Image (tube, rainbow, N blue to C red; front, side):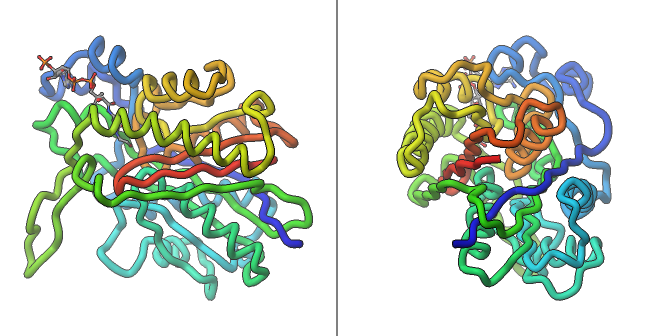
Length: 320
Ligand code: UT7
């Protein structure tokens, strides 16, 4: 039987941290106290003008390749999860492939918003298990600052830019123990950027719109359900989990999810305070940080969870 294992991780955050007070100084009608109390966010990073999602993805991918001990030519599959692609087409995955210097690997984007990385790793794992591919790069990369309405304080304080990457390779021992993906498009209006390019202009809105409370309630419900069903599928108890790494949207969502599962907060990796919500990049950014600072170690059971626009959600249970 062939399995898939994560061999290496990498991440990249653009520019310097931008504090809540920096946002106030830019004229946004908010406060450091409100943002920290309601979200736990203290800082986020923003890409420079002209920087694209692929530009954030490339250093993250190079770091993941180095950590995995793999050469760019070893890759036969490149999946990029993003909702803020460089272009309408071709895919950001093809642009990343070219910037990395790989030729010939299958390359495509996954669009599942904040669940995109979890979707991407699950797809890569199926490719490995089928035996058709042996070495995959999965990147979550986002420049949400480009789709924020800076007049809308209910959304613009929440998001940041960044990228995280993993290199997976086929293996005789399981790395991915179980996964779980879902979507319910009837909830598409609670979190969306409902615009399109048509005849040379944007039709609809180019800005992110969100019903924050509806997203909050649904996120807590589906994260709890998905965590439990993924653990059940692998025959693992919650107390056997070493780390939970959920999508980093809001510290209160993370606290509510931990409480629902009966997991102490010390077993969650939380980066939302320093990164904000980086959509598809948030889970691989957090995973990379926790591996590099020594918290996540070989043999640990780690549950990665995505949730977001679509509505989409899912989980991946790993043995590192
Ligand atoms: O990837 C998934 C993406 N999204 C999420 O996970 C977000 C999920 N939702 C949330 O995190 C929360 O719902 C928010 C952080 C977005 C909002 O928190 P809330 O506790 O649900 O606040 P609220 O919407 O009920 O607003 C409370 C008050 C309102 O004022 P009034 O009507 O009580 O006078 C808002 O106008 O807070 C006000 N408010 C703000 N005040 C200062 C909203 N945004 C801000 C702001 N600064 N940035």
